[in-house]
Image (cartoon, rainbow, N blue to C red; front, side):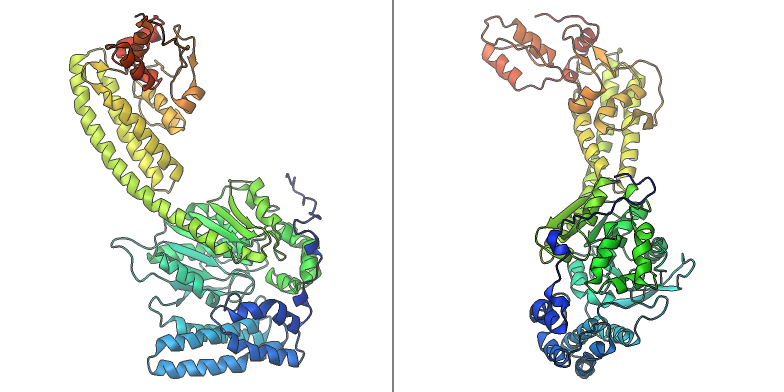
Length: 620
């Protein structure tokens, strides 16, 4: 879809179908919200009631229903949660005074959960505090949460990072929560996940996620996104998050706690938008990004945001993006914030994994599909009939994907260390072999032998320099190259010189282009002559071996079908010698030897290869 600088036609036929226009029962007041949507997850302490208990919330919602308090933005709704939260906090303080930190932590988390629900659906301090009462709940939640988290075995630490890259209306400091694994292998630093929160879930709302990271040996830095909670970045500036994440990553790198070669980002809901953006703007600093329930382009369309108004989200979204009025947002948000409109999606990105429910009524599933039409190839998992964020199945897909990236880099490091040692041994081995060969066969140029050794050394250094920059594709090429190099070099034994080197290191580099799949011009070795083995034609086979053939299957020929039932064994012997194999023995062994061989002319003896290149037909 080309934009040509203009906004593409807004989608009208949403994948959500008729559900797009449906009014959900929980939109009909607090009683409907509690009974049709919130009561069940509350009984099992799952989002948004994680860390909480049903016994704490039931009397609060009874009070709200009895008094017909239906405005979630109003003070009466928020204040209804305070008495229970304050009581639980006092009880936690009493237990903490006796060093009973486990039970006091449970009470503190229950109180924090009450404060969380009381400040729903949204708070911000840009350009001013959106609600004084909800802000009070937010401040209370942070205090009580830190009473719990600061006493854990792997504690939560609040750190204030200087906003070094601030500009315009950006504020001075970036508050984040940090957790570090208690144990890391000697000499190593733990990987890190930068967790970007959403419209209503903030730093103290991610105990379970940070616990999961710690179980895997990963640390975490949790930060709010522009326009929410304590985030200092200007919500009206589409580029403010770029400055924000640069300051965060620079600070983390300077502290030296985490392995900066293994940094991932996970963006939740509204944070998913910023996850997609950072995957492109900071791709060199990240090994992977998860964008869960993300909006990217269509979310900002007028018809979608107008429907979001039925979900009571439009006022919050207007404030969150720096608009003073909903109509102002409807008119200009897509042009200003769409990742398609501002060209972000067309840039290269790091590994990017989209996950969501197909029936997401908050962020259109189209916004998780659109990025696949642009830029770097992406990955995704979408769940039919699931709602926003793809719960409850989503985490079972996200964690294995993250593990595969973290573990693959560890595996690459181990593999390459072994390959590097093996390459060095090969170099030493074949330096000696070349010396012996040169004494026996003066046809083989000394310069070519030295050039090949030099090539191996330079390739070793260059490949591993690239790999250390986390290029998994090059790692696979190295392993493939090692197989080819080992097979070829092993043939340099005794009098059977099966590969007649007739060129310099540059020619060999050209040949190695088959294995690497990268231009030979990038190989920094000297050319000593102009001979080329890149293309050749044989009169015997009538085949031309070009780059495409080599890239696909190395240098190989398709032989005419042979009638093995013939009593004349001369053809069998030709084919065997053609492959550098013995032509001695009874017919049955000749056939078996031929069937088990590879049709590869790189295995020809030097004389045979010379004759073949000269177009001389072999005979039996």
